[in-house]
Length: 496
Image (tube, rainbow, N blue to C red; front, side, top):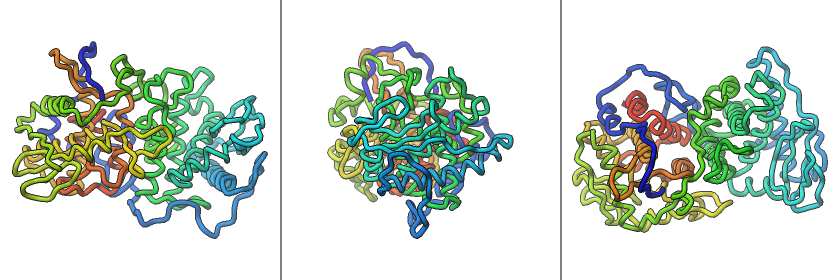
């Protein structure tokens, strides 16, 4: 996050205070589809991912005892990474052989003409007119209708940090481009289509394939809809664009927040939804923006241990929830302890005291941004300042929920909390300062930190007052997104 001391934007997209009031008053009413959402109104279930029950004990990864697929691959070494890639592509072929004619007027799927493997640190070869020396990548090349992958660096790196299904996800994305090439106008694609549209569609097509895997239809792979799918979604943080790259730039793929949405849309609604993605729709929801001057100076990060920034956080929360009429809770650094009741470090809401108690030292660890290539939140890695501030905001939102008389325990509370935290984030994005003291506002890349934090096993953003998190990481992200895009309407209709 950064501090904005001047600005020109005047739209306030979210009246979050109204959201808090309506949450306690509106139930079961109809509404318009929520901007940026893959799900219909009322469809989010805390225990499922797009309707598939979460089972963290279910298998995720390559199936055991299944013969390896046989596909012709140039320059392969037939090692573990190549076998993983070939099995993935074989299952992806099976999926599109079924889905393309079913979803696109009988059009038949044709496998790509060329598959190639290489080691970016080994002997270089030429693919798609480019040398593979130091080319840590996987890609689809339309010029010769090929898919290639770096077995030496990229695939082992993904496998080590996120597991083998992350490799499958990357190849499913590249095959999504091959599908676009085959569908052409049926996928809203032509030579002038911006890169971001092609990339969002490819992520979406990958999501459709992963639903196929989650439904136990893939020959070589399983994925459970809990931690297994969370790891795939977390991969989006690793392969996202650098914060500050505009979506209008050639080569833009999207921030993790954008890429996860596209994946979830495909997972939930299938390939037809992906093909409908076009410039207008994507421009209406894309979070990828260029950094402004203030963001560039701070790189979008502030020192959460600086009392000044905690004061600005409190100010933004108080203003965002002002119209609820609730008495704003104080934020106290006391080790996240309540005089009565259990604590949920690094932040705790104490209902009897109406206090958000925090452990600033633990929050500072969350706030430390990971280095490029590190998995956020893993092995002691931090995530970024927004992740820490969102933990506090989630506990603050419980005070607002208490004021309107809704329960502070249970899965519905967890979803409501994530939604209201997302709505607060949007409020900070559009907040225009009217004094000389500055305001805390969301910076480019902060939404990626939100996604990363939401997928952590111990995150509070989608947890009730006892710290119990809703089971589905998929649903946590969806609930947050509803709040960010649709504020009071989304939170009220979905989680009353």
